[in-house]
Image (cartoon, rainbow, N blue to C red; front, side, top):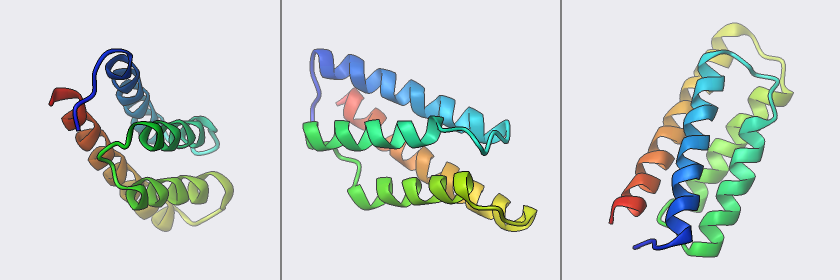
Length: 102
C-alpha cells in the first residue's frame, strides 16, 4: 500500500519511535511504558491507514511487551521473551519501511 503526504511523515516518526523501543530493550529498561504506548499508536495507525503490518504480529509484540512490563521472570526466560519481541519489532519496522518506500 502506498502512503502519501502527512501519513508518510507520521509513518516515518512511528518507525523512529519503534527504533527507540528497540533501544530501550537493549538498555534493559523493562519497567518502561514506552513500548506499550508504541504498540497502541501502531495499532491505531495501521487500522486507520489499512497498513501492511498484520494485526496478529502487532498483537504478539504487544503481548510480549506486556509480559516484560508486568511479569517477574527469571533471567533466561526474560532474555527469550526480549529476543522474540525485538524480532517481532524488527519485522514490523521492516514492513512499515516497505510501506514508506513504495
